[in-house]
Amino acid sequence: MSKTITFQVQPGGSLRGEIRVPGDKSMSHRSIMLGSLAEGVTHVTGFLNAEDAISTLEAFRAMGVKIEGPVNGEVTIHGVGKHGLQAPEKPLYLGNSGTSMRLLSGLLAGQPFDTVLTGDKSLESRPMKRVTAPLALMGAEIVTQENGTAPLHIKGKAGKLQGIHYDMPIASAQVKSCLLLAGMYAEGETSVTEPAPTRDHTERMLNGFGYPVQREGSTARITNQGKLTAARIDVPSDISSAAFFLVGASIAPDSDVTLRHVGINPTRTGVIDILRLMGANIEVLNEREVGGEPVADLHVRSAQLKGINIPEHLVPLAIDEFPVLFVAAACAEGQTVLTGAEELRVKESDRIQVMADGLQILGVDAQPTKDGMLINGGGHIGTGEVESHGDHRIAMSFSIAGLRANGPITIRDCANVNTSFPEFRDLATKLGLALTSF
Image (cartoon, helix red, strand yellow):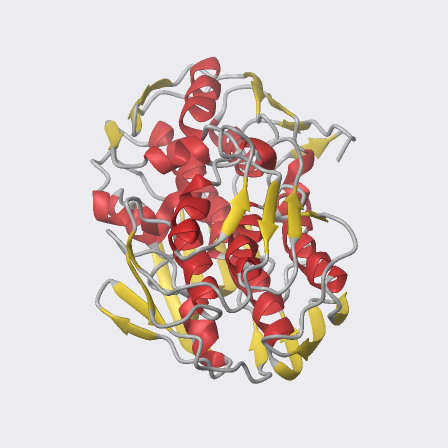
């Protein structure tokens, strides 16, 4: 990722057309992890061929799993069974992928070999104590840097982990998933209670592979008494990627966009709920279920958005979509207030501060708070040069802001768009966004 990429967006325009955005990143990660631990051959379609998901795929290859692809979104995984992973010959480099690092730390804590997890500069600055602390309660041995960051040195404790009950202090699907994966290798029951609903792809997919996970209210339970059996996984389009076009078509006049085959898992649809509360015109069409996950086509047309107080119960259901929701708020009439989103400060960047800084450069009244943002919308978005700080969602969000800008927007440090959505530029320009990169 040494190559720097700059985006430039010309102002105005509308979005029109029909597209299918790439596969869901969360599910792509988990399909590799669980397919590798399954008995038999797992076939995945719709796999996201982007750097984050490839980091997970390469890690399992390094642990002795034969994986074919991805070719046109298809991956074939020759599972080695729950106890079939082999010690990697060198540290596992996970690029920019926090999901890979946090979930693998739980999975690897119960193996009969030691591992080291590393990543790029951004990943190695992100907090890992949120997973290493509860794993330590299970008997895991993971050495971090002094401030709790990677590299993570994991001592395999096969047969020595103990199940625990953990009340998560902050709603985080990554922490929940990490502990459930560790629980597959722990004595007794492991249970996790979340303070608010988070994405449940891990539980759904474990069940899809035949591994029993009990869910009662806000608690998920797992034991080491189970095995994974190979399955067919069809990964729907990623709603986090669709979100850029949901906002873009809402804010740009004369827009009309259909997004095909989007995953609408109820733990992920906060962005639709929030936009609808703001007055967005979004229709959910052709609802169906694919591989245990709900899928639909989303039809969105221009609307006059209004500012709202974002309900806190929706925050964990839209945590990755807030950068582009801040752009929606800048274009809405009146004030939008976000609270309860301190998690945004420890993503690929401090997304509260970075978005506030960029919006202010573009003339938007955006005031960061400890756990959110206060945005007075209604004015036009101005012209200027903003920094994405290597955060893919920041780069794409400011690209969408160009639809309502009164001059060009230049966005620096956009190479990491390839970590989650390499087709973004092509799909955005196909729909009508005047985006170039150099």
